Length: 481
Image (cartoon, rainbow, N blue to C red):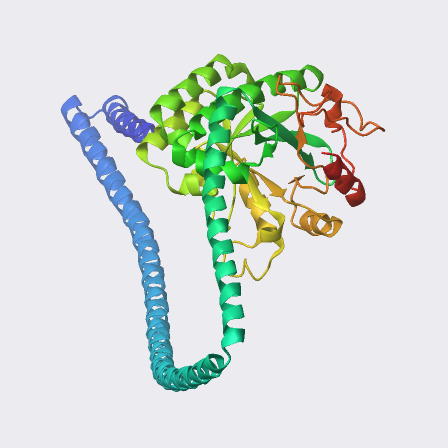
């Protein structure tokens, strides 16, 4: 694009040439043709001069640009050289590091070989010791056989003493036989008592509180199942659970316990909306489609209580889930029910997987948390377990707490809930579904009627606001219960 200055210069040159021709024509008297030739010659000279001057100026500018480009190229070459030097130094360092790593690997390999040799020597020495022990055991057995032979010969010399000892042996054998017979009859009696208790609705639940630590404020209750036989004698869960599972009756027991837990929970929530009840469910109930369908229908009808009714399963149940049980757990979780895990035998826990399945509580025995020797091989230290579970929305509950010393140690582990005889033992409820009171612990002891059941609703003697940690008081309450 032509610049304005160039156009202005061209116009000026034309004007100057025309003016020169006009002056020669008018003043000097030269003819018009000659004046035009002179004017054209002057214009040509002006154009040539302007072109030459512009070319010289452009050459100067191009020279400066070439000089700048040369300087930039030199700087770029210098930087490339610097980068090459640094890259060479880095390659040298990497080679030296690789050589050092190779030396270290070789040293570790040699140490491993030495350890392998030592292990082989140790295995050989252990084998030698085993052989020596086997020889010593054989020698002791042979000497014991000789002693028995000698004692038998001495016993044959005294007929009277032998006959008396024979009578005693016969009496002991008959006693053991009668004991075995009574044991078998005891199993049959327990089975009959379970069937009778289910048919006649003699299934009771006992409530044991779970308290917050260190405030010892009641937050939940666990429903513990008990049966009563025809003479109203209480049969503990440890005595009838295995028999009921073998006979296929545990599902009916769990269904009845769920009914009573819902009744108790409704009574409790009249006075305290923040309280919850833990209801134990057996693995056989979870895996039986017919029984589970009945339980699911009942829980569906009481879906409004899902945030306060916690279904509790054993740790072994969650470790042996088949597709049917997984589907049943998902159906319960879909309806808003939360789960708890008890009977924990080790701390190999996957909190993310449990949280995905709906687990919100894990109950670990206090002895398991505080036994450092037992936890030496676990994946996580017990002091970090509460924080790890909390990241996934799972609360840790320490159960079977029986001493104040355990409470102090558990507080160092950041355990926020506790359960055990230190706070309160399981207390019975009337079979009509009466719930625990929200009042304070009464001064008088609870009256028990002739059938072994509580005579009044207020006899539970558990304060939802606060439970005393006095061990003597806990033992006295346990004796009254």
